[in-house]
Image (cartoon, rainbow, N blue to C red; front, side, top):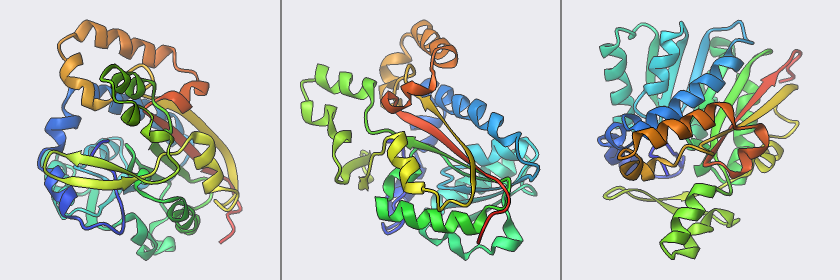
Length: 285
């Protein structure tokens, strides 16, 4: 589990602790960089379909995606429940010379309805690397209502969600003779996932692409199309980075396979799946 995951009702302190080590533990690692690059490639294809260049990012973490979006010419409102994550985002924006393009605010996913739809009208709403896995099915449905209010016609909602089954994870824990951990994602109940060595645990729900699409439902405005791709079918989860950084050639091979041999039907077996909803006018509010 990566530390960008969010639970709206949880205290922000655990995420504040994680913020101090997140880039070193994930963002700047070889596997973390390749996984994020994969997301950016998939996201770029969907961003090209909207004419608006305003983005709302949920669970922004330390601002890596916000800086990338701003570098593509987007005005970004980056939000996170953790004040430390938001502070890190502001620091990155300043370092990149993109302060005018990025506004960062402390806000949980449950509170995004506070933003005025008419004033914001984001062409893109993004939640990366499992932020929505800390929402229960009921909370996902509530989020759907908020998204319907915020996304204008021809808007895009994209999320990277941890899937219900991960080949890498099951194999890893089975080899360690830990069958309970190997199949923990199959539980319909929340799983206590550890954020870090000193940050405690957070309740986590896992979803298949079909389950997530159903939860978003037809109530998500008028959906023009939905696309799903695997993220991390060939590339290993970030917690395996200590092993794979010793074998860069093997990791390059896996990255090649991730780029060229990952059809959509593999999404239910990948560590994460990328899912994108596009709205079409008229969007009933």
